[in-house]
Length: 444
Ligand code: IMP
Ligand code: MG
Image: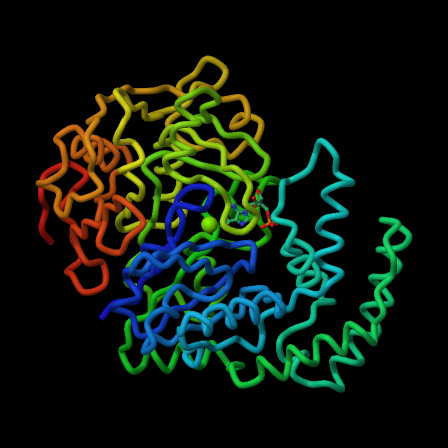
């Protein structure tokens, strides 16, 4: 058995949904520990596309328990809509559980998110507009509404009457927006409470009991390392901790129960929203990657910015998350290219830098140092093993593993469940991976 954290090693949208869906096959419990409906996980099963925002990808397996953990923020309206969509597709939500200590996104959070972005002008973050930042801000300010408040109508009345009066001052005086009617909001949220009540649990206890029973637990990250509030490209980040450490905080478990941390990285890089992006491609190649990779946001539909693989970011993700291995996704998107560049270092003020700079202005000003590799110009979408890959594609993967000094456990070559090369099963397999950092098969 193994308890595994899966995190995004770049700016989100690395294809974590597909990887967690795959690994969920072997998991008894899947936990989301941070973020909210800003996340968008696309999972394709038997040609059918599921777009998930808050519900863990494990939901597609009826015997897998799925927990929305205490570190998440829950927009009940969107969650219920997502549950209804799954039910309409004959996917049961009986195995879904919601932490009673997660925070709840309210209508004023969404309004303030959008209004404050507008107010920022040139300094905008490019948020998803889903109220995520303001919900976490209220959590820190200790004016947040938690799921357990939602479940107690007397407490909800008390808390929301006070909070909405307070938020109305901000909405009206600061943003020139109409005030909210607290009675309407309370009524709306009490309906959500009735719908969600059967799913609410003490999630930390539930997870701990699963640990004691030696179940396989998968902690499914949302967003990515560089969107981390503390260690990402601040201020162009989300408001939670998508790094591996965040999984412990957001689930209410201790780090000693974690056996393995898997980083998911695309074979190139994308970013949505504002902020520096050293390897960004503005010309035809960027367009080509975006089109072939269908790089449009699952949540907002925004076009993602595309660029070459950045190994400085990759090494940073290894460091910050303590990655054991990598899953490289969307390798097939590079199939048509004659040449592929990889950023191996940055040049900052005329000096070569191999480490991710913690100074935001150094990162904004850095020039990528590239190494160019030959492309394979062949279709890889049907390859089922490393041996079936064109040699240039295998070389590309080996090069990435060497640069990041971690082995590659999974390679994804398309959205389908079967378009995957599992070099080593990170849950069941021994702690080793065949595509080693030195490019030679290694055993434990
Ligand atoms: P927020 O999380 O909506 O506050 O947005 C903050 C930043 O994180 C923006 O740049 C968003 O585009 C980005 N972001 C949030 N969630 C995701 C995600 O799931 N994938 C990629 N980017 C995201
Ligand atoms: Mg996404």
